[in-house]
Image 1 (cartoon, rainbow, N blue to C red):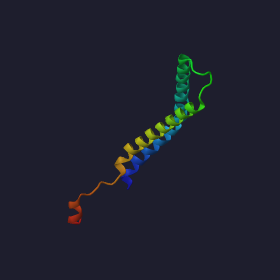
Image 2 (cartoon, rainbow, N blue to C red):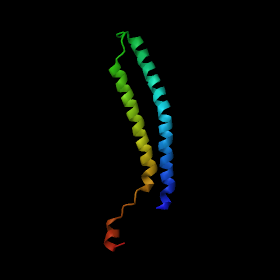
Image 3 (tube, one colour):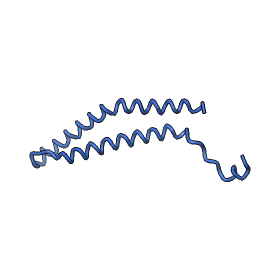
Image 4 (cartoon, rainbow, N blue to C red):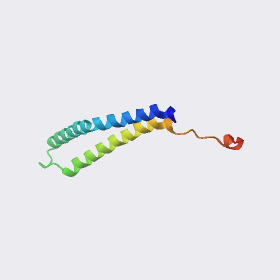
Length: 95
């Protein structure tokens, strides 16, 4: 099992790095999203009040997307750790 130590360390680095950066990314994407929302609101001459529900849905979608990207990166890096599937022939031969 020592041959998978490098892969496990790579997964740990990906997770720690993404959690370290995720706070800043959420702030930047949230600020960008709120700015775009404000510009659209200004151009359309909508109501003066911002929709808290719309902004919250945007934040939820943003965080969900970031977590899904993290899970995808972990899956790609950890794919090597999964044992290979043996074919039916290998089972019949007893090996």
